[in-house]
Amino acid sequence: MLKGKNIILGISGGIAAYKSVTLLRLLVKAGAEVQVVITPNGKEFITPVTLSSLSGRPVVSEFFSANTGEWHSHVSLGVWADAMIVAPATASTLAKMASGVADNMLVTTYLSARCPVFVAPAMDLDMMAHPTTARNLATLRADGVHVIEPEVGELASHLVGRGRMEEPEKIAAVLDDFFSEKQTLAGKKVLISAGPTYERIDPVRFIGNFSTGKMGYAIAEEAASRGAEVTLVSGPTALKTSHAGIRVVDVESAAEMLAACRAAFDTADIAIMAAAVADYAPAHPFDHKIKRETDGIDTIELVKNPDIAATLGAMKRSNQRLVGFALETDDAVAHGRDKMARKNLDMIVVNSLADAGAGFGTDTNKITILTNGGGEYVFPLKPKREVAVDIMDHIERI
Ligand code: CTP
Image (cartoon, rainbow, N blue to C red; front, side, top):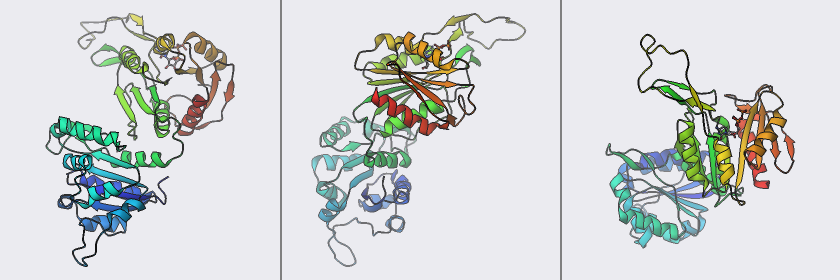
């Protein structure tokens, strides 16, 4: 989607400027024309030579070229661009943008830009948490600027907190999605459960299952790429998402998953229950490691876990859509219909372990979609990424 797009990459003076080099490379690799505009402080962190070599264009920083005395026209840049991304956006640059202090090329270009503008803030946690920064970001949002939220993590100061610039891959993905025409879920909130749950027996052992979360994560990325604001409630998995539109809530047990899903469901337009929730949990988990000799247990008493999909089904309002999964070994369609009715779902995605290439851990899946209006749609074996597209296409239709 970035192919042939004209993008201004604004770089201000923060340590995260080193990540802008990767962002520049990603944008150029995706086929975009990138013009770098850097603040005087930005040049302290990263050299214009690196940036001009990668972008294939002279880097703009001053109003006048030191060599030729030529005037750099922020106006023509502002008209040329299809999008402007300021990454990193420091507290000072955000403040200048919010109040129109045009004392450098970057802010001047911003004021002349007719295109959509994105900012990826990066600063220390206290600067990020300061009411001034919050106020400036609110002003920029109100002015239509897209804010790519910073992450929580270790900062240049070695303090841990919110203020780490979003990863270049995610920033590039946000821009890519913006230019994609399939923003069919813009403004919608989607809740997705994914992965297994672990039910503790003692501090080192659990009851779990073989779910890897791949299907749920693929659906989350597809929904986010259509513009949805996604909450991904994830059981323990090794997966990471590469999309800034996805908020991951990590949980371990079914009880935690239920609490996280309930909290997000109220404001959700669509909920997709792709998690493989353990049906039972140990009734009395040990608070210490069970010792073979001294504790010597033969049985573990189990209690039934809450049914998350059914709980949401009972809470569901008429403007909400609830989608479930059913992994079956036999009579998949009949069991799927039964589950859809029992849990008050609008649609259920059935996969059978009898089909080679379907189920846990695989990169492919073979699904049948059942809708509560009686629809039945059989799909061939496909990569999970493509299965996610089929599922989201269908959800948008029900
Ligand atoms: N599900 C859930 N909470 C549970 C169990 C299941 O939210 N405690 C959801 C799953 O995420 C899935 C659907 O319900 O969307 C069906 O899950 P499945 O395990 O196949 O169904 P069960 O109700 O557990 O039925 P059974 O074990 O009899 O097959």
